[in-house]
Image 1 (tube, rainbow, N blue to C red):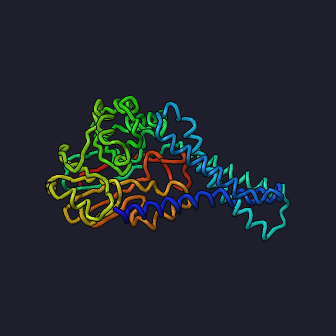
Image 2 (image 1 turned 45 degrees about the vertical axis):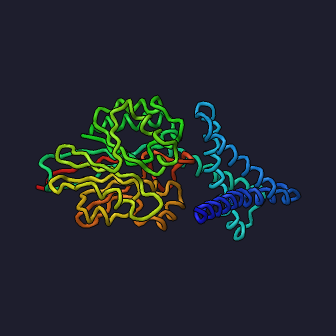
Image 3 (image 1 turned 60 degrees about the horizontal axis):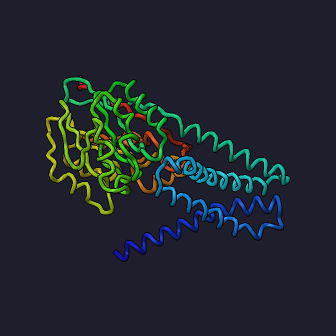
Length: 358
């Protein structure tokens, strides 16, 4: 317990210092160009802005989204903007060491670069792509189509975006839908917030991601109780020739997946699909003879350069992986969290076609 608290405090301190630094460098650089005499105030300005942004973000999490919805979006936007501004200033700084750039041109390049990337990232953050993959199996006698959704983050993503996802799924006409975690991420999500999912005219199987454990207990269950969504928490169901297995998200300690699957009997005559939010402990379902693992969580890194950094934490980050007799698909997610931006990744609805071996 004490060690956990110390680790949490260390992380919070490190995050706070990093967030202040993310402000200090661009503020200091821009002020030194525009008004050098005010440069000593850069740190105070950085501390003030970082404190206000983080305070408002934390406060907004305690209130109903209808009251804090727009300000929270602005806060998320600032997270993304200051990140891109930091790198725009850094790139321009490096260029200025090699080429003689005047103050006006330097500032112009900084903001053109930052705003251009922000605009592109915002557009990508609002787009929805369809990814199609095809698999074969000797265990089935007819084709099946499945839609994979993860990381929808109801509570953080807009109703209009969620409606776009539902419309896309219905257009694809799958046999059933899988929602592999991080479906709900706010305490105040109600059945009204996911009312659009009632329009899905096929079975929907849903399992917990990490964000479901950050909200009040039973919030997800109460939110979906008026829908056809079937919650699978460490259990399996049969869907015709398929066996759908849902497990709670990988938590703090290794062997969680083994614990969650120990009482689940894998039917070797059925094509088995494991819904496992984080792409970890893949050796356990392999050893149990699972045919397909569906995961998300990584967001594909969401925003460059995190698209590179995420590879340090996860062996499997995005795409289809062949693990021998078991296949693993890790999606970048249909939705996003934090800044509503994408750079080097995409929002995707995944259509999986499984056909009999010829």
